[in-house]
Image (tube, rainbow, N blue to C red; front, side, top):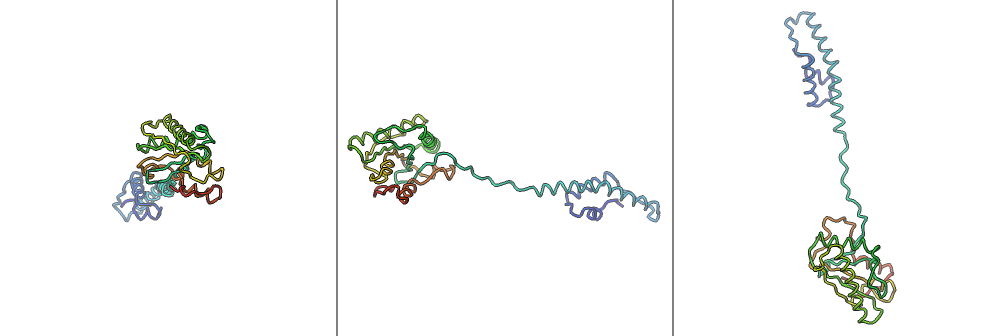
Length: 254
């Protein structure tokens, strides 16, 4: 007869699992090997059997409980926290899908003062860096860089000025690694306004440079990018119009 059987183990620690019970068996077997009693009528033999069982229980039970406790701690450990996408803290680009490709409208920090074809690189730099990274890592398509002016001044001067603005942005992108052969600069004077030139805010918006990534899809440029790294260019303009900050023109929609 063995000194420790399954019934004994379950009475000692009913919450211990099958694996822990198996470990207990091995521990008990190594501590107290089987005792064969030839004379079951012998009170001396029965005394030995009783004392052996008591000894095994007193030694093995703490071991079993320690194993079970370790198992319960492991099972009760909290599940790994879900991965939360990092919040984008860089410049937000205004983009839209058009028939020609993906339109990128540079924000007010890159817009130009009256009669100027240069911009503040400290303010515009992060946006130009962002655009250059997208153009070099997400697409190899050609890019139309298009300059625009407000309605003040002579048409021929505005045409020259709008082209100079487009070339200024192209030069900034080339200095950031965009191949010059992919860039095509053009000036459209005041012929393609975003907003009415009747207000100063509208004129400021019209002094701009737009980039069209030709024959490209917006899904390709934004794939793998943080969701809050982009906004709709047309949606932003509509918001300004709804707030009464600028007045609309018929050609403002993409």
